[in-house]
Length: 309
Image (tube, rainbow, N blue to C red; front, side):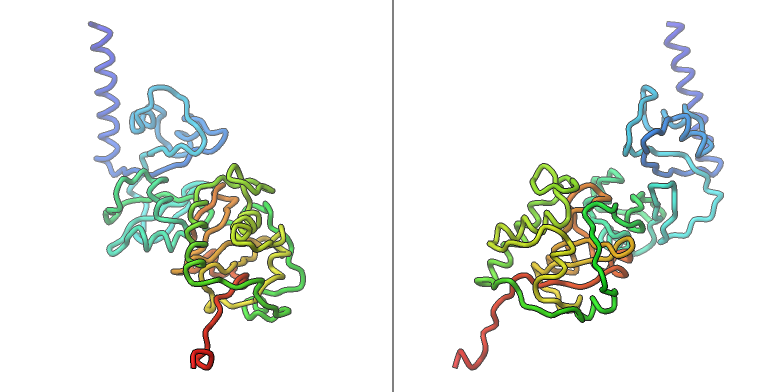
């Protein structure tokens, strides 16, 4: 009985301490655990106690795992501007929700999907509150890992966007608009497939392997590497993109990354940063400034008025 009372007393003290945090101007931040982190090192980084971390996150022991999301008390004394991104750690950014924000509008700013925002922040609904702090992996501002990216020699970004390299033709034609729509549906079935450098199966796939696998289903044999894929098909600009077109982006130095455009300013790609196949937006800041060009692999045959007459 005495032991139970002591435990109850300890819990009450911790609760009062945490209550003191909030009463004296503390709020909650999110932190994504990195390899090598411990509750002790995190507590030192944020200036809070290990006990406060354990209580806030309902942890019974000291064990934590990489990519686990922890709630951390943080001071309200620091000025936080709503609607702006702020670096929390080497791997995370935060965003303070402002009036008029939606998950859709924030996903475009962050360059990640609504589903991923909800997963990272443990959101069960799409409802947001003004002043709410959302956490993001910082990949929207960092380059993809070198992965399967390859050098595109002798092509500047301006030239690529204008399609000023050797022009050529699509490798095939769609039988009808429904076939092209089917490709988009097939592309989406790959969402969540793990990223694996050099992979080409549902157990793991890289960006050029993903593109090659999709078009293989539709009887088009593409080269294996991004460099080779960049050189085939019909070169097009961003404003000419149609569903099924390949989209290329510049990465470190002269390396490249490829995905498949699915309409509505979105593309699907095997992301080495997120370690999976995912949807991103062309107008996300990171991808917008690195867009090289589109490549049309198959074209929908246009019916001329003369042939109808």
